[in-house]
Image (cartoon, rainbow, N blue to C red; front, side, top):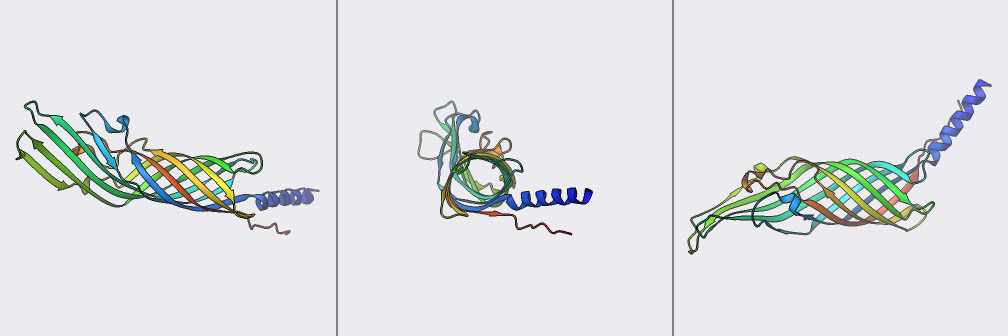
Amino acid sequence: MKFKLLLLIGILFGFNELKAQNRLGVELGAGVPAFSNGAISESQLPTESTDVVFASNIHYLRKLAGTKNWYWGGRAGFEQYAFDFKVTQADGVGGIYGKEVNHKSSYLLIGPTIDLGIGKYRQYLHVYSNVSIGFLLNATQNTREYHLLNNPIPVSDLTRSTDFYMNSVICRWAFGLKQHLPLGKMWQFTFNEYYSFMPFGDLSRATFTNGNNLHPGYFSIQAGVMHKFRDAKRVQDN
Protein backbone atom coordinates (compact mmCIF):
# COMPACT_ATOMS: atom_id res chain seq x y z
CA MET A 1 0.00 0.00 0.00
CA LYS A 2 2.79 2.38 0.94
CA PHE A 3 4.57 1.59 -2.35
CA LYS A 4 1.43 2.36 -4.37
CA LEU A 5 0.91 5.62 -2.49
CA LEU A 6 4.49 6.70 -3.11
CA LEU A 7 4.18 5.73 -6.77
CA LEU A 8 0.97 7.78 -7.10
CA ILE A 9 2.64 10.81 -5.50
CA GLY A 10 5.60 10.39 -7.82
CA ILE A 11 3.36 10.18 -10.90
CA LEU A 12 1.38 13.26 -9.85
CA PHE A 13 4.57 15.17 -9.11
CA GLY A 14 6.03 14.15 -12.43
CA PHE A 15 2.85 15.16 -14.27
CA ASN A 16 2.98 18.56 -12.58
CA GLU A 17 6.60 18.99 -13.68
CA LEU A 18 5.70 17.90 -17.18
CA LYS A 19 2.90 20.47 -17.31
CA ALA A 20 5.02 23.32 -15.96
CA GLN A 21 5.18 26.08 -18.52
CA ASN A 22 8.38 27.97 -19.28
CA ARG A 23 8.80 31.12 -21.35
CA LEU A 24 12.03 32.34 -22.92
CA GLY A 25 12.14 35.59 -24.87
CA VAL A 26 14.34 38.29 -26.34
CA GLU A 27 13.38 41.88 -27.18
CA LEU A 28 15.04 44.84 -28.90
CA GLY A 29 14.01 48.48 -28.93
CA ALA A 30 14.80 51.97 -27.69
CA GLY A 31 14.84 53.86 -24.42
CA VAL A 32 15.15 57.41 -23.20
CA PRO A 33 16.10 58.81 -19.78
CA ALA A 34 13.40 60.96 -18.18
CA PHE A 35 14.07 63.75 -15.67
CA SER A 36 11.53 65.33 -13.34
CA ASN A 37 11.68 67.91 -10.60
CA GLY A 38 11.90 65.15 -8.04
CA ALA A 39 14.93 63.67 -9.78
CA ILE A 40 16.89 66.91 -10.04
CA SER A 41 17.10 68.39 -6.53
CA GLU A 42 16.90 72.05 -5.46
CA SER A 43 18.89 74.27 -7.80
CA GLN A 44 18.03 77.21 -10.02
CA LEU A 45 16.96 76.87 -13.65
CA PRO A 46 17.90 73.22 -14.36
CA THR A 47 17.42 72.06 -17.95
CA GLU A 48 18.03 68.72 -19.68
CA SER A 49 18.12 67.39 -23.21
CA THR A 50 17.96 63.63 -23.71
CA ASP A 51 18.67 61.26 -26.61
CA VAL A 52 16.79 58.11 -27.63
CA VAL A 53 19.19 55.15 -27.35
CA PHE A 54 19.26 51.39 -27.96
CA ALA A 55 17.87 49.01 -25.30
CA SER A 56 17.28 45.25 -25.18
CA ASN A 57 16.61 42.36 -22.83
CA ILE A 58 16.45 38.58 -22.58
CA HIS A 59 14.11 37.00 -20.04
CA TYR A 60 13.00 33.65 -18.65
CA LEU A 61 9.69 33.03 -16.89
CA ARG A 62 8.21 29.95 -15.25
CA LYS A 63 4.60 29.51 -14.15
CA LEU A 64 4.23 29.41 -10.38
CA ALA A 65 3.02 26.02 -9.14
CA GLY A 66 -0.70 25.88 -8.47
CA THR A 67 -1.50 29.08 -10.39
CA LYS A 68 -2.78 29.87 -13.87
CA ASN A 69 -1.75 33.50 -14.22
CA TRP A 70 1.42 34.08 -12.19
CA TYR A 71 4.97 33.66 -13.44
CA TRP A 72 8.37 34.30 -11.92
CA GLY A 73 11.84 34.32 -13.41
CA GLY A 74 14.79 36.50 -14.30
CA ARG A 75 15.74 39.24 -16.74
CA ALA A 76 19.01 40.52 -18.17
CA GLY A 77 18.74 43.90 -19.88
CA PHE A 78 20.99 46.35 -21.69
CA GLU A 79 20.23 50.06 -21.17
CA GLN A 80 21.99 53.21 -22.30
CA TYR A 81 21.78 56.78 -21.04
CA ALA A 82 22.57 59.86 -23.11
CA PHE A 83 21.72 63.36 -21.88
CA ASP A 84 23.00 66.89 -21.31
CA PHE A 85 22.26 68.36 -17.91
CA LYS A 86 22.63 72.10 -17.27
CA VAL A 87 22.10 74.24 -14.19
CA THR A 88 22.71 78.00 -13.80
CA GLN A 89 22.66 80.39 -10.87
CA ALA A 90 22.86 84.19 -10.71
CA ASP A 91 26.05 85.62 -9.25
CA GLY A 92 24.37 88.75 -7.85
CA VAL A 93 26.20 91.21 -10.12
CA GLY A 94 24.49 90.55 -13.44
CA GLY A 95 26.34 87.38 -14.41
CA ILE A 96 25.74 83.66 -13.98
CA TYR A 97 27.51 80.61 -12.68
CA GLY A 98 26.83 77.54 -14.76
CA LYS A 99 27.58 73.83 -14.88
CA GLU A 100 26.85 71.50 -17.79
CA VAL A 101 27.17 67.70 -17.74
CA ASN A 102 27.38 65.74 -20.98
CA HIS A 103 26.69 62.12 -20.05
CA LYS A 104 26.74 58.84 -21.98
CA SER A 105 26.77 55.40 -20.36
CA SER A 106 25.56 51.83 -20.75
CA TYR A 107 24.67 49.23 -18.13
CA LEU A 108 23.97 45.51 -17.96
CA LEU A 109 21.02 45.00 -15.60
CA ILE A 110 20.22 41.62 -14.01
CA GLY A 111 17.43 40.78 -11.59
CA PRO A 112 14.26 38.82 -10.72
CA THR A 113 10.87 39.36 -12.39
CA ILE A 114 7.28 38.70 -11.33
CA ASP A 115 4.64 38.56 -14.09
CA LEU A 116 0.83 38.40 -14.14
CA GLY A 117 -1.06 37.20 -17.22
CA ILE A 118 -4.44 38.88 -17.71
CA GLY A 119 -7.18 36.48 -18.79
CA LYS A 120 -8.32 32.98 -17.94
CA TYR A 121 -6.84 31.13 -20.92
CA ARG A 122 -5.22 33.22 -23.66
CA GLN A 123 -3.35 35.76 -21.51
CA TYR A 124 -2.33 38.01 -24.38
CA LEU A 125 -1.83 40.92 -21.96
CA HIS A 126 0.72 40.80 -19.13
CA VAL A 127 1.80 43.21 -16.40
CA TYR A 128 5.10 42.73 -14.62
CA SER A 129 7.65 44.22 -12.25
CA ASN A 130 11.33 43.58 -11.74
CA VAL A 131 14.21 44.88 -9.64
CA SER A 132 17.65 44.91 -11.29
CA ILE A 133 21.22 45.53 -10.30
CA GLY A 134 23.09 47.35 -13.08
CA PHE A 135 26.79 46.99 -13.85
CA LEU A 136 28.56 49.75 -15.77
CA LEU A 137 29.88 48.63 -19.17
CA ASN A 138 31.24 51.93 -20.49
CA ALA A 139 30.84 55.62 -19.80
CA THR A 140 31.84 59.06 -21.03
CA GLN A 141 31.09 62.15 -18.98
CA ASN A 142 32.36 65.72 -19.41
CA THR A 143 31.54 68.58 -17.06
CA ARG A 144 31.81 72.26 -17.97
CA GLU A 145 31.98 74.89 -15.19
CA TYR A 146 31.83 78.57 -16.10
CA HIS A 147 31.23 82.10 -14.82
CA LEU A 148 29.84 84.56 -17.38
CA LEU A 149 29.33 88.33 -17.14
CA ASN A 150 27.79 90.74 -19.67
CA ASN A 151 30.87 90.82 -21.83
CA PRO A 152 32.23 88.51 -24.53
CA ILE A 153 35.06 87.20 -22.34
CA PRO A 154 34.06 84.73 -19.59
CA VAL A 155 35.49 85.17 -16.13
CA SER A 156 36.17 81.43 -16.09
CA ASP A 157 35.33 78.48 -18.33
CA LEU A 158 36.67 74.99 -17.66
CA THR A 159 35.68 71.64 -19.17
CA ARG A 160 37.03 68.42 -17.69
CA SER A 161 36.42 64.68 -17.90
CA THR A 162 34.44 63.38 -14.92
CA ASP A 163 34.19 59.71 -15.90
CA PHE A 164 35.62 58.75 -12.54
CA TYR A 165 32.50 60.09 -10.80
CA MET A 166 30.31 57.51 -12.56
CA ASN A 167 28.89 54.80 -10.31
CA SER A 168 29.87 51.29 -11.38
CA VAL A 169 26.78 49.67 -9.79
CA ILE A 170 23.19 50.98 -9.79
CA CYS A 171 19.73 49.70 -8.82
CA ARG A 172 16.56 50.11 -10.90
CA TRP A 173 12.94 49.14 -10.24
CA ALA A 174 10.73 48.70 -13.30
CA PHE A 175 7.00 48.34 -14.01
CA GLY A 176 5.86 47.21 -17.43
CA LEU A 177 3.00 46.21 -19.71
CA LYS A 178 3.43 43.56 -22.39
CA GLN A 179 1.22 42.42 -25.26
CA HIS A 180 1.49 38.91 -26.77
CA LEU A 181 0.45 38.03 -30.33
CA PRO A 182 0.51 34.32 -31.34
CA LEU A 183 2.89 33.28 -34.12
CA GLY A 184 2.17 29.59 -33.68
CA LYS A 185 1.37 27.11 -30.94
CA MET A 186 4.57 27.72 -28.98
CA TRP A 187 5.78 31.09 -30.33
CA GLN A 188 4.50 34.59 -29.66
CA PHE A 189 5.41 38.10 -30.77
CA THR A 190 5.80 40.48 -27.80
CA PHE A 191 5.46 44.24 -27.53
CA ASN A 192 6.84 45.65 -24.29
CA GLU A 193 6.54 49.09 -22.67
CA TYR A 194 8.05 49.86 -19.26
CA TYR A 195 9.19 52.63 -16.94
CA SER A 196 11.96 52.25 -14.37
CA PHE A 197 13.39 54.45 -11.65
CA MET A 198 16.28 54.37 -9.21
CA PRO A 199 14.96 53.90 -5.63
CA PHE A 200 18.37 54.96 -4.32
CA GLY A 201 21.79 55.89 -5.67
CA ASP A 202 22.76 57.83 -8.80
CA LEU A 203 24.35 57.37 -12.20
CA SER A 204 26.97 59.92 -11.24
CA ARG A 205 27.94 61.59 -7.99
CA ALA A 206 26.78 65.18 -7.53
CA THR A 207 30.20 66.76 -6.99
CA PHE A 208 30.20 68.69 -10.26
CA THR A 209 26.48 69.47 -10.61
CA ASN A 210 25.76 71.94 -7.78
CA GLY A 211 24.48 69.09 -5.66
CA ASN A 212 22.13 67.73 -8.31
CA ASN A 213 21.80 63.95 -8.23
CA LEU A 214 21.68 62.32 -11.66
CA HIS A 215 19.21 59.47 -11.25
CA PRO A 216 16.73 59.88 -14.12
CA GLY A 217 13.78 57.65 -14.80
CA TYR A 218 13.81 55.53 -17.93
CA PHE A 219 11.10 54.88 -20.56
CA SER A 220 11.56 52.01 -23.02
CA ILE A 221 9.58 50.39 -25.85
CA GLN A 222 10.78 47.02 -27.16
CA ALA A 223 9.53 44.26 -29.44
CA GLY A 224 10.63 40.64 -29.78
CA VAL A 225 9.69 36.98 -29.72
CA MET A 226 8.90 34.55 -26.91
CA HIS A 227 9.03 30.74 -26.98
CA LYS A 228 6.87 28.63 -24.67
CA PHE A 229 7.98 25.14 -23.69
CA ARG A 230 7.30 22.51 -21.04
CA ASP A 231 9.74 20.74 -18.77
CA ALA A 232 11.42 17.74 -20.37
CA LYS A 233 11.65 15.84 -17.07
CA ARG A 234 9.96 12.42 -17.15
CA VAL A 235 8.89 10.15 -14.38
CA GLN A 236 10.95 6.99 -14.12
CA ASP A 237 9.39 3.98 -12.43
CA ASN A 238 12.04 2.62 -10.18
